[in-house]
Image (tube, rainbow, N blue to C red; front, top):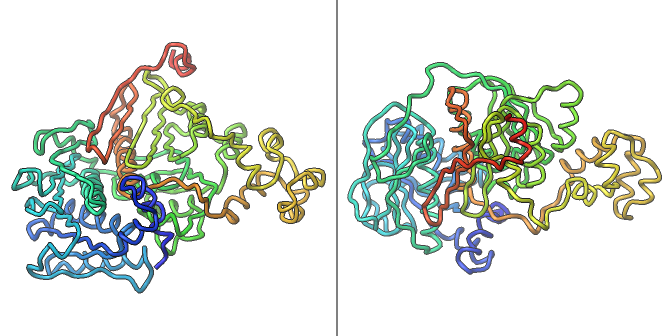
Length: 485
């Protein structure tokens, strides 16, 4: 089994537990998790979505998954087996748990339904409308509130993220007492059953005209949710990289068949046919040149970028609305900035880390080209003088592209030749997926006409189970305020 799949979750597990990354990887490979769907919930569409999304995420850091469902739910079992094969290869599968097999044989149990199991190693989740609910075995309750409501996949997917997050902590033996409900419509939290379920989803598809900048882990969560929403339209998907095996851990829409494909192309395949995606295997700063040559800025831009300088750069094209999605360790964050509002923008919300290098300097390290020429003349041709000035180990590859545009060479190098970064950031699927689900909820709300004057600054911690949604105003001297005026 390829341990690269567990590298991102293992690094986070090591940071939380104090164990080595190798020890956490070994722990994940040995542990067993049961996901069960209560019989009374087996025909509920939202509960089925929660069940399958929980299996999907758990497989990305724990390969030994057991599933307990009604015997006649053969379609669900088939999908579970397909998910195991997609993440771990054709030889992988899931264990089918029948009858009353003791739950103590499993190291963690995720129950989709209303019954709260007495074992401390268990978590129960369900949803209603835009709300997601979670309760652990030691929460003091016997049942988790639930009543049938109009189907809404956003609450269902959020519930899966909450449950898998608790299971992850249980495997690491980190206390995780939970009894809460969260709305991805209002971002309020409360005791289960205390929040409004929110408006019904549109009866007909709404038309999307947007850019998706960055097609990594949080973008997979966004696309997974959008795929299941009444949304059609067009999208420009921009990402310079291809998908690697180590991305299977935190990327909830990735499979073995995705490896070595462009990340933008994976998003295109996922959202087809309802959304017409133009995939751009491009550096954002190169894609931005198209805006000077006739490509209009989309009214809505969604970002899933790690680099703060790039996030600032996207903000500065000033779309009607920007939805900025970010995730780090056990923290999920979504910022929504309306151009005409006085809410905080990404420029003020996110400070550039001291160690973060300029985009051109980063690309120079990959290609050997002069960073000044990358920034100032990206469409210019590579010259012999540049090749001779490049590091010796970069010259042979550059020589083959003599006289060709720098931007084309850079895009090929970053797409095809990128190596595993030993300094990669830890990431787990339930955090990246939750970030994407909240971003998808904001996308749908925007399309439904729920556009507010103030920005949204949403943050959720899976460690403390707390979340907050702030509506902060930007400073009067910020450049976003002159645009708003």
